[in-house]
Image (cartoon, one colour):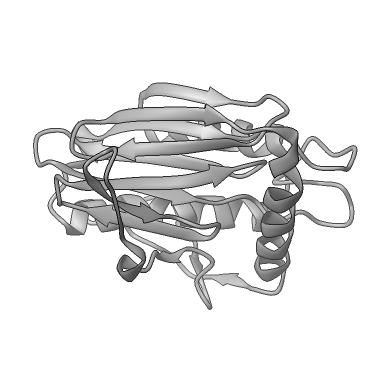
Length: 211
């Protein structure tokens, strides 16, 4: 079986359900997923929301079991300029994806039925590194390697975007944000990137249902 990464001081943690806010317009409970988080739900009245710059988010659900979730991650950027090209960086991305998939399976989802949509990976930073492109390329390579079909994608570009994901139906609403939002998004993602670089990867993750 393919080796899977695990992380000490997990770089991908469960979003706090206590952050739920009722969105009167959507008639749903909105849960915000911040960088380095994931969230899984069986509740038909929950809406998952995240804001993406160079980070990517995978929105995954089992349409039969009515279980869905979202993560929000990026690969750690090294001073060498290599973003996601070394095995250590790739392990962080693998961990974020496997964590979400594992939690969906633990909640009752079937891996073979999973519908995957991916977003983000914009080149919105004030550096010459194509950080967003590397993140976008990683998630597409991951899906191909793991045998997932990408049902929808909205990747790249030069602006941040807000994603509203309805796990019960698979509906996604994407809104591009203005350049005035870029500074805030970049700051949050830089802080997240610094946390990633301070962590170490070790060991394996095994998907439930696999041998």
